[in-house]
Image (tube, rainbow, N blue to C red; front, side, top):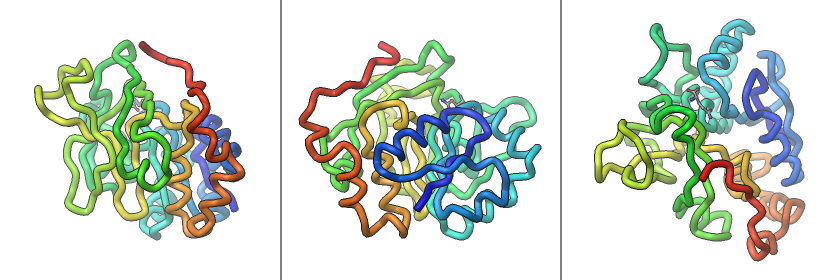
Length: 239
Ligand code: GLN
């Protein structure tokens, strides 16, 4: 019972730490053959161009595409979302290779440069309905991408009003999509592995057949239901 975490670069350790809190083992994936030992995969945030270069160097793209095509659950966070998208804009000249499969267009660095990174309380109706807890989630956006458009098969799980963030890329009144689900794929523009709230991780685990029927295990071996009654311990990263 293990979840693979792509460990080429970025916040893979943080994802593995959250999985551990939920009583689930995370396995670092660096080689194509290691994908055979896991039935689901998290692609962390980091720097998607660097990650793509490393994935290319290790000849990982064919195996990653195959993994997605086989319908195995895959969750991309931030740079991982860019990796999963069918199309990305705002890339460096010449672009970068993507795994694809997620029927959407992402915009890299949509909210601006590193200094425009921010935290916000994000309404998460679908995740809160399934996982309980408060209706919002403290989302950390670090030089984050946004999703510009989605195909009809994509479910929008969260968006932010463009007015709540400083961005030149958004038109006023526009809503900016920051979390989606499409079949076996989950994608978030923010970093749920950096905050204490484990609901996105347990939501993803429920997409994995081997964990799907055991949601009680996931919540009780972790922080327990009293977690949400205790004061939040998340530190503000940006204010
Ligand atoms: N801006 C990064 C990229 O384009 C993503 C940042 C992140 O993963 N926090 O790859």
